[in-house]
Image (cartoon, rainbow, N blue to C red; front, side):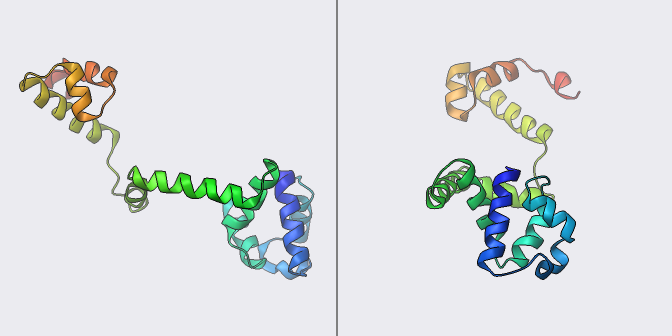
Amino acid sequence: MSKELAAVLKTARAVRQLSQQDLGDAGDRKHLWLMEGGRSSPTINKLEQLASALQFDPVSLLALTVAIKGDENVWTVLERVKAELLAFEQQGGASLLMDHFEGRAPTRSSERLKRLAAVKACRREGLTQKATAERLGLPRSSVHDLWNVSDSDNAH
C-alpha cells in the first residue's frame, strides 16, 4: 500500500497547503520524499507523527489509503470498519484488548484449564461430547481432545 499511502500523504499535504519542511519533526525531507514516492513506508509511530503534522487522525489517512487500494469510496470503507469494530466489541474484543494492553490477559494455558474443567464437569453430569460442545460453545474437536485428559496429563 506504499503507492496508495504516498498519494494520500501528498494530497493531504497539498490540501493543508504544507511543504515537506512544514512537517518538521514528522520526518526528514529525504524520508518524506521516499514515502511520497511510494518507495518507503512509515512505521506506526511515524504515521502518527505525520497525521498530527497534517492535522489528520491516523485512521483517516489509513481509511483513505484503503479506499484508493480497493478502488472504493472512503465512506464504504468506514462503514465496513464500523461493522467490523461493532462485531469485535460484541465478541468481547474490546474488553479483552484492554486486558491485553494492561497485562491482565488470560494465558493460553489458563484458558485451556478453564475449558478442561468445564468439559470434565459436563462429563461428570453424564453429558455426551456433542452435548458438551453445544453447552460450552466449543468445537466438538476441542471437546474430544479434552474429554479423556487426566489430571497428570494436564500438569505438563
